[in-house]
Length: 126
Image 1 (cartoon, rainbow, N blue to C red):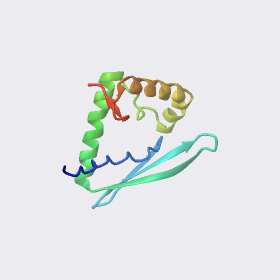
Image 2 (image 1 turned 180 degrees about the vertical axis):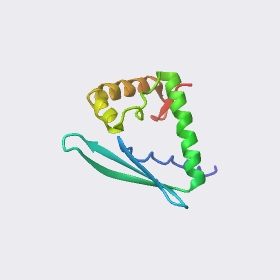
Image 3 (image 1 turned 60 degrees about the horizontal axis):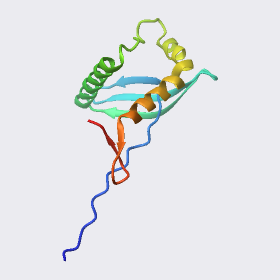
Image 4 (image 1 turned 30 degrees about the vertical axis):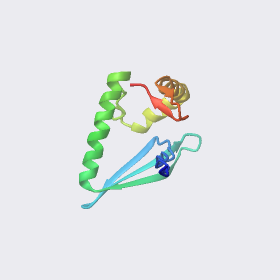
């Protein structure tokens, strides 16, 4: 009887970090995107992640993000435009009191679209 080889394991998803603050910069060779957390209680920002992308990949990332936003708005309705007010951070501050309720609702919607697979992993409904 031939020996069975173990199936390769799927890589684990990276740890998710919440970001409500962003900075974008560029030079001739790369785009730098810094992500952070605005802390209203101290009116400060803690940066935690930086992405460095070549110009071609930055443009591809922008197109992918734009497509994802269009699909989200098609599924969930329009997203408020943070660029309208004179202070974009004001939009973030206004969204914070409602964040927990919206996050919980999003988790429930996502869980409703997942089914337990026989191997114990979760499988998305199609």
